[in-house]
Image (cartoon, rainbow, N blue to C red; front, side, top):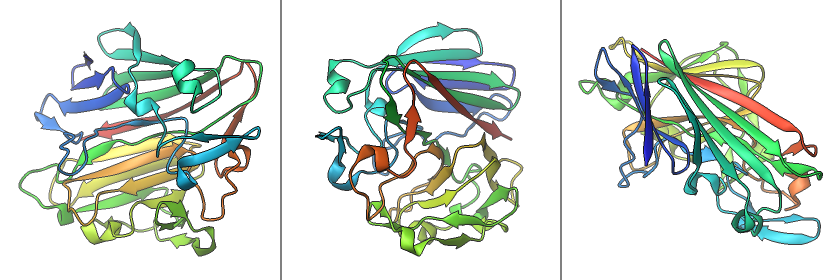
Length: 291
């Protein structure tokens, strides 16, 4: 089952399964921006990452003396959400903790995902509500995949990544599925980065980000582009499968990140983990703008 929302410029389709954005199309250009989810390369479109981002060491963590198992990027992307509100150009979804989720994640929560079309883009807003009196630990993030090339007459290599503000950002290199903090270095995001499949030979590019950030996929040979904008989400992943040479690129704003090589396994000590007091609410958002 899915929900369709639209305005004068765009039409979007969101699946109830995973509350996942599956399509974002321009009416004027009949142009699809979201990856179609071909399993030959990667069978997702724009999954929601919760309650962790990235991989845990051995897919395990420890909390209050007990060990739990969670797959990479958590479980929300593989669960059915409830549609709680819908208008012409908005849709809201909810996932509530249950006995099933508590087997792998011992916290009581309500997770809301709100989509709203506006002008040339769509805003995705996350709310995490701690429904217990105890502190809750979590991470959350987006994983939208965009068609590259956007113009079928062009090639993958005709596109580049453009960052705003134009400044260097710390890059956190992956070693296997985990981050090697000893190899942190400045990434040259103060200039455009030409896209190539070789760019992702070591998996995702992960940057530390602060304040307001925009990352665009552009080409000098086409007027069409896509931009992801967010504020105060401390990490972003940029990924395309390699060496598969898949025709898409993900721009992934995250509140949380994969385990480090030296992670203790204690959830409270995990890099990027969020701590939410009892009965409190966490909110964050990002926007996708298209041309």
